[in-house]
Image (cartoon, rainbow, N blue to C red; front, side, top):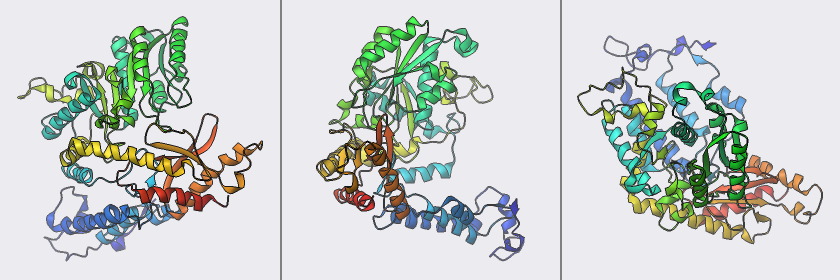
Length: 513
């Protein structure tokens, strides 16, 4: 049903032939007379309540409401008639109030956080221009900025002179899909026309700790999840090279065609990086495509001090790298990079003549849209470009170095703190994984149901912190390990006081469990 608010549609403006009424809102063109005051009010709300108050330690990370109550507040029915500006302002204020403040220093829940002011302004710019980046004629500035940024990112990966190709993607999952698509086309170009029935059974290999998007890509591309061979990992979450070799040989003995290994640089939970050089050696030996999912870990390439973590990535055929993760670019900003020039176009081109005409008055090589799987596409590049302009490479490097310093500091806080136990004694990235063990369980490690009881601790503490609104940190099990917390330090705005608060607040919320 639709809400009939006929009695509320009278404008606060005087109704005459020159003054628009609420019923004129079907028009999509902005009017200085009709919209300027409204837009300025909204910007003031965003600056005050989302940008500054929402990132202040004095505010809540979230003001929790149960789903049914929140739905009632926002309105269960969409209106038949236009709402007044006053009602729209109230709705916007409610949206801001009850949304999670992911820029808050105490939001450490995901592999993204913070609110970079330059990235935010860039997003406002692109939303104001409303571009779609597929041809040079409709997006000249953003086409050139993408070309420049992607080339520079390939240079940081280690592709000679930044050579190769790349695309901006709607998230790292889609970038990994590009990786498998390009790998398959590189090995079997006929499949683009004939389909997978024209080949023997295809096999992709990745580690048991790899991102779930690899599994999704396999069923989406018709490879099948049973043909995704999962390779064992060591205690630190790094791919076991001996088992990788065994699984490749198993696929070959079965008459299948392994064509790709997807390595990970910065696993989602532990932050581990697979032995990239060793994987590259094996891929070279068996003639397999090497993809590196560095969605999380790629930002470390900006740091002279820490880029060694990704040694071997320069040997990859393709790389996923999300600047919206470690580098703090606002959501979303993801890229797929490959050393193979023209392969993206060969694999994905559909040559739509109504969009990609070859007889344009400029060089059609700048019409990049045909190498993308999608058509309409946001100009995510501007956020990263403006941040790079504002901070410089040195500023981005200092940001990354600060994250590693913060991770080391938090690790030192909890290493010998009573009730805390690290999952990895020496975290290799900025993920710090740990258990909080309340007093009631500290002398029960040998009890038969100890793991079962410990498994229930993190979810209960998470519930309490969300309802209190004090912080947000995620938890998860991993293989045979009971639930543990994963603290992700991605915001260089987090300071030592914040990190001390994290440990103290978890103690306060869980000491009576």
